[in-house]
Length: 188
Image 1 (cartoon, one colour):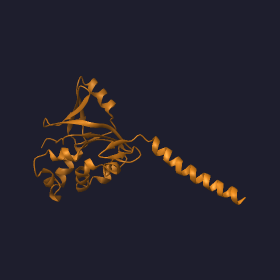
Image 2 (cartoon, one colour):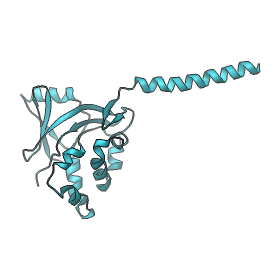
Image 3 (tube, helix red, strand yellow):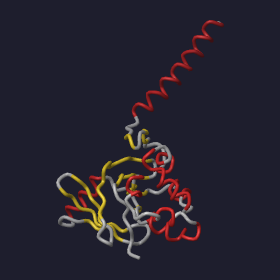
Image 4 (cartoon, helix red, strand yellow):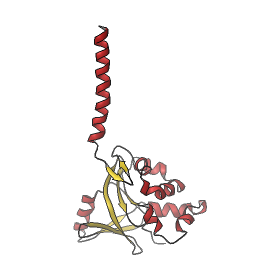
């Protein structure tokens, strides 16, 4: 009886261990900034693990938007990399991160967010329906224009600045992230 109980306990432990492992392997991850992005985690949980998004995460924290982006959503986030932030004029990031500029920072960050979940297929359909362009309304209230150049997806801001989607369809539990190579800015 004692041996049966030990074997039973071992079997349950084995199943739990490898069952959990099997679940993790079934989850389709995308590598961003050297880290796996898990569809079962929310936008913030995943972004915090990306080495390429430390500036974005710091900005989201400074803007007080962590709780919002951990929320139910769904959200479509066009996430600029550290390199994208580095392309801004010298001192811009530092200025935006100052407490007295919190509203401006919130405006810039929410300009990168569209309500709802739009994967690249959804955006491509909207572009086709718009005869080559799709206008997306951001959470900030501004407009981004999505368009294709060959197989590459781009977004253009209201000032004419453009960003290329370098990694598309990074699924999250509360939406999707598309990594971009430039920071887009709303009209002042």
